[in-house]
Amino acid sequence: MQSVGIYEAKSRFSALIELVEQGEEVRITRHGKEVVRLLPVRRRPVITDEQIARELGQMDALHASIRPAAEVAAAPDTLRRKGRAAAA
Image (cartoon, rainbow, N blue to C red; front, side, top):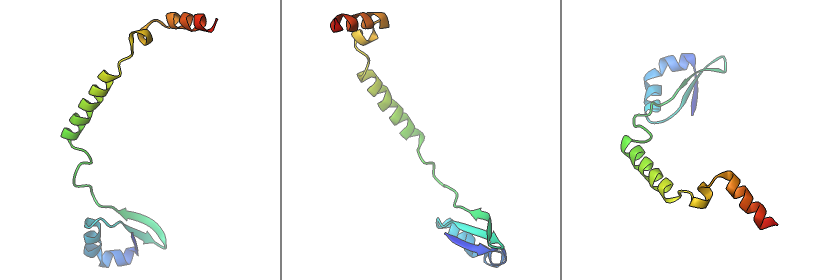
């Protein structure tokens, strides 16, 4: 990260833009206080549509493999009675 004053930024603008294009962050200050921050633009998406589709498919497969057993899917009252009967 580089910090420069407004006057210096004005005179070195092209060079600062090149730094930002290379991934550097540049902060421009006025009287020592930051007033502008130049950040590189992300040129590629973080995740592609194909990756999203693949991840969703894997999630669907996982959900299918962990379906609740018939006992777990039973009504809560049934489970409660079974628990009470076992405790008695």
